[in-house]
Length: 518
Image (cartoon, rainbow, N blue to C red; front, side, top):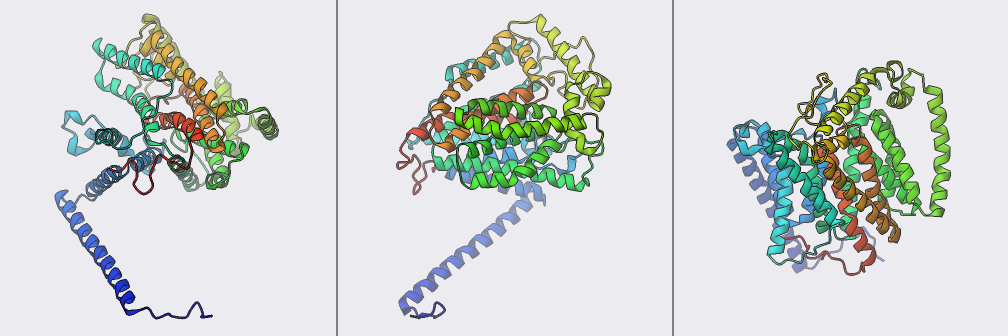
């Protein structure tokens, strides 16, 4: 038997064919390298040596080509960029944010500063590209499977009233640009709620989407750990470690991991989340977002309620000792000023109304109380249809200055804010839409058999509850990243239902000829 190291002599014709193939590949690589170098050189000349502008052109071209080749790949890239980049810098970390320009209007850039129509941002351009290519697929007669939209009537009424409130608000003297900033995130959410089930239609696509979410959110954990190390594990006067919305995303991954464990779903995603659980929880705590502490508690309670009897008992056996430990910790460090007592102090400041108990967050709590009073007084003037978007809410109690340009339009409590802007009619439609979705999702959840699909369904429902909790005390309905992520999770419901019932041997996506290729 010849050794594996024995060199076998190939027939001459075969050897010549192999050499020819290698030469062709080398020639193609050389042509690609030369063409790329020429292209980069031309871009640098055209941009007068501006490396950033040249890189932006290359990136944009790559995104367009990739999206035309596979719409689902372009969509995954869009979701990854939204979760990976930073819309707002945490205080004290202005120089370490990533992709801030992705969320800014084009007017922010000197090249477009004098163009009125440049009140549009890269997110909207990329989202528009996805929608245009999807429409082209339909026009060209490609195999596009249209999925139904869950609770479509409730969704339609809510977004229709949003539009009416915007037109009404601007018509009665409101400002267009503030109205645009107020509504953008909500309409991103609506577009994704409709668009996701039209793109994510196979188990493979769903798994890739979840990988994108897991990896992008986990990068924010790494970002938080790096910042913590650079600070020497000392916050100083800083009150936050990551973006406001990042801890909310961490909760969705906590629930995802709980679901994998409880429903017996094994795989690489479960292993990855298990390894990243400890650093993620540490960054979650040190992010110092009090509202997300409450949201995590709500998420755990909601998850336990969703579980069947046997799994619920198992979960309670795990949670009960943790609750006892948490209670003992709060009791021990309730009045402690040490760094290890930071989470206890944050919880304490959330419930304390006196200055001594709330500490340095007393004035933050008081500011929110003044805002809520002003919102209540404003709502009294127009309780049915609201004041409309683009209008300032009244301030019978003058608010102190904070570095937020839309302070007079958007308060911290964005649940009350919706009532003021849309009135009782719009407020009812808001709750009707989300309640109807949760009811339908709970019905689907109860009938799902696949543990992976069941877990994602639970994440989508609980994400709604957490979003409402944090939006009650913080600016979270107008943050782009929040609402896009929520729209993605909620938009998966029709796909989960379809994948659980269809035969996986006949996938919607042909791997040899991708469904979303032009």
